[in-house]
Image (cartoon, rainbow, N blue to C red; front, side):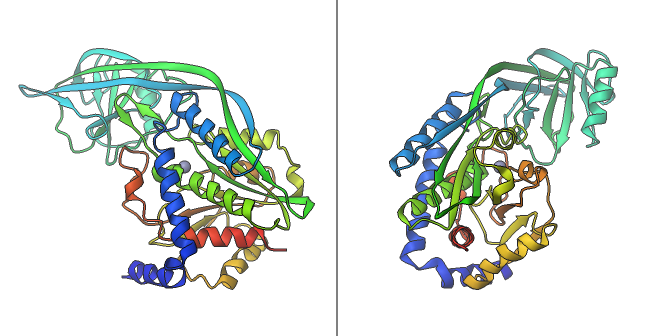
Length: 391
Ligand SMILES: [Zn+2]
């Protein structure tokens, strides 16, 4: 009910203006395009296409996009097949639905007997979830061939390199198998990935804002593609929309750096690279605003870093209050969960905005463009613009 009323309220405030309709159309179109790039993993063809696309798009808007390149390795699982034997029945497992290799799972090819205890040369069917770190230690100590680990939800990730312990996640409610055969191939790629950024010159150059969104996602795993519509084609699309609107508006009071980060999913590597070699002195920044997971909003907006930066948050929140945007607001303390974090570590005031709601698809094959509702993305855009245009 609460969500319904909130939705209706937003609709009254913003939903029917031609500007918001146009904005949502822009966002939908850009997310569809960004999701064509095979999951946008760094150092993959999809990641390279996404980078080239952002450069092209920003150039069309009249900017001179810059690349900030850094070296990186990425481990990609290129083939993942599993088959089990339960009683007399042999059954293939479906990738992404029944099982998902851990991103750092080394190549495997063979068939193993299953045991619920860690035994040398066996597949260890871990009966119930327990700390994965401990499981890996035990598996290493007992020379287990492969760990079959239960999860309620199969959630993907991406790794820098393979681990020595093979971990395969399985859906928690699958019947225990007596045998399992696995075929996994992987490839370690080394190269350069790049953040893409532009500057919108402001009236003053003695201070500046950074607005960021990561454009990378998990890429592919075997036949499974992680589209990353909400995570974070949505934020990248919002960054592009902001770029277009800033290009067409009078100059903002201060310079604005718009940064599409890469390698966020590998551990905030792109934003780390930025703060290590910033094109603008960090000490002179007014702040950093990070957009990640902004395709919904039925349950309001969450701001990470609001509750532990009271003075900064007060200034930011005042803009929202003045705009009359009544929204469910979750103000959270800082956390190392997206690209605002390296900025905070360097003493820059920084906030991470995300929108709550939606079906909860996350790091899986379901996070696709048609699922996004854009319920509160336009008000968030207006809020960010309000901040950038505050004196
Ligand atoms: Zn993300």
